Image (cartoon, rainbow, N blue to C red; front, side):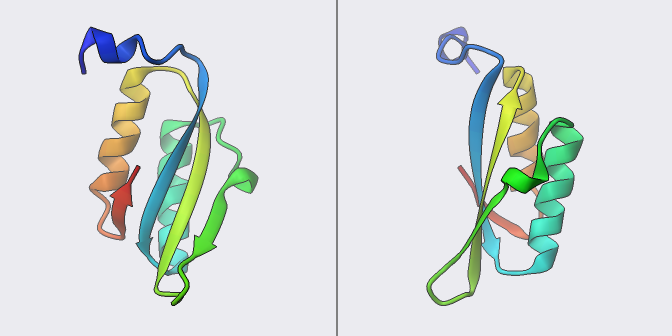
Length: 89
């Protein structure tokens, strides 16, 4: 990322990530494991889980205390490459 993009963030900061995928307990567990590996201070109790109207998909919102751009990039890479995850915003 460019230096200009880095200036948009002031670290540390609360940073919400929205992860979407096919509804399953495995998705929730996988996202939790990634969050804790990249942001050890993430509180699992703060994870917001919403089901789609058909129940086919889950949306998980995880707000972390982001400490660096490198941390955010690592989270996006790991989450978006996971086979159960469809979209990371």
